[in-house]
Amino acid sequence: MSQNYSSRRAFLKSSSLAAAAVALRGSSSFAQTAQVDAHIDISPSETIATISPEIYGHFIEHLGGVIYDGVWVGESSKIPNINGVRKDFIDTMRAVQAPVLRWPGGCFADSYDWRDGIGPRSRRPARTAFWNQQDPNTYGLHEFMQTCRAIGAKPYLAANLRTQPARDFYQEIEYCNAPAGDVPSNSAAPATPNALAAQRAANGDRAPFNVDLWGVGNESWGCGGNMTPEEYAAEYRRFTAWTPTYGSTPLRFVAVGPNGDDVDWTRRLFKALYGNPERRHLWGLSIHYYTSGSPSKFAAGDALAFNNDEFYDLLTRGSLMEKVVTDHWTAIRESVPNALSNQSRPSVRLVVDEWGAWYGKGTELAPQYNLSQQSTMRDALLTGITLDIFQRHSDKVGAAAVAQSINCLHSLMLAQEDKFCVTPTFHIFQMYLAHRGAQAVRTEFNAPSIPNPMGTAPSQVGGSSYIGQLPPIQSLAGLSGSASLHGKTLTLTVVNPHLTQPRTTEIAVRGSSITSAKGTVLAENDVHAHNDFAHPNAVKPSAIASLKPAGGKLVHTFPPASVTSLEIALV
Image (tube, rainbow, N blue to C red; front, side):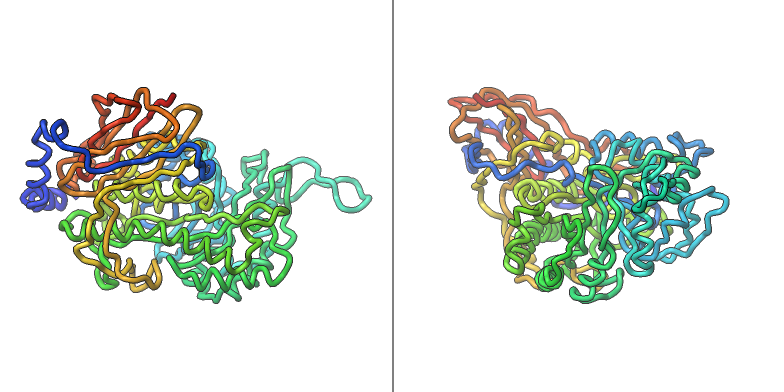
């Protein structure tokens, strides 16, 4: 790996992009002399909704080096671990306060038998998994629950709808959630112990797992069964009919949603679902949208060797997450008006449980690490843009999961044997922590937009469009972000995607005055900058030295290609 990356660094070091950015940022007087060229207006009285902590969720799949050597190293490993789970993984997920962890897939889920991963490990069968790799089933349901407990995350289980019958889904819920003691029967006969709960206790967990969040299949339009929306709707109703509930926490079922911006799937699905009055525990609609490194289905782009045009193009297409969210919300409302407003049921929420950048081969940790890739400052900006979209639409997005947590696609961590580092994406998740549970408020950004030099059609990966049919994408917002309020503390996150131009910005809060502010920024002289095992801290955030409000407002210069988080005190 080191030789590969060192050669890439030599290429990138000589790029004109790096030289231009270094020259610009070398001017210490620029920020002091520049005039205001952008405005941010925040309206605390115009609340959107409470920002659900679950929009900052994560995802691990039995794919490449995600589970084995990423999450799971085994109790006997010399690598520091907690009950076999890599300690660095646990510590990093704790550091971002991971609220939700999705498992076992992805496409893997719809070929997975949950019973293969329970009981003594020596007796678990090895299987050839979906991604054509051997899975020893060493890491199964109990190990996943231990991982969630160690992190403090809620489990989000993706159930197998393609290759298992509905009974297996019913019994998986029962195995996870039934109390281990006596359970009253429906007859006058004496109470009897639940056999599946007893089996769970014998496998090491007497207390129920209390899993409330369940994905009913995965990508049923593709790897999950190649179904039509109507076919899937029938399967959803069959799988969820009369599923058992234990305790006071209701189950939350997430129906399989569209491939990117395929609103036809959503319209037809909800019409079919609401064709029958029984939609048991329907809580969310899953959405998957990846942003590839190239608009062409024949080339996914490179994680490290990209030029200026490709940089802007990827971020422009990534910003279309906003259109994906609003399009599907509108499709649900237009198809079934009471799906979003029926007072007798909770509103359906959007669950963006796979999102992130997807590049081609060339930066993987090792050949067997399928879909492994490096992560740069470009990915940090994409992360900020995406999380800000979720926050601006906190009334629509109830949960999300970045794909994936470690060693795959848009990861927060890279690990190989005893080597480990975090990526720039990890730092963005940390910088956005203050938004959790706060009230999202209306915020207007006014800055010159950035033309997309490529003006391309949307993302495609592996020949399958992850965005659907959209017109060419012409421009990127010159500044974007979101704001949230908790008491008298306002959190403002801002992305400046311009490669060379800082944005000196006046920040005003309607009906309030800014008394003080502090902040953190992630910015590098070169947007190709990244962390690796030899340089684990090459990219990291820094505190903003001086923020001095004047006249109740704040003027701040956002550096080129940066993500900034500001904590603003109001009066």
